[in-house]
Image (cartoon, rainbow, N blue to C red; front, side, top):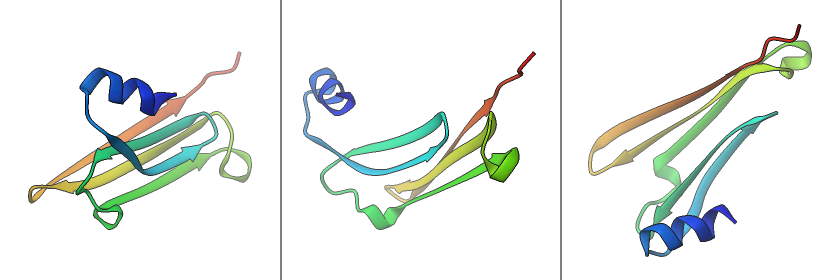
Length: 80
């Protein structure tokens, strides 16, 4: 469903290059043809029992035209 919405909005053909999921936090990287999977690195880190729970992060690093981009998504939930 996400892929169809991206393609409808931007009018190009995309494909899922990689994804990384940590409980309720996820990062998905969609790219047009020409971006190779080996140009993308992902990682995750959890905090809590067994490194899962309500806190953590996922990140992605990729290279486009010689530039390196890094995105980190954090999740933190306070339970009262």
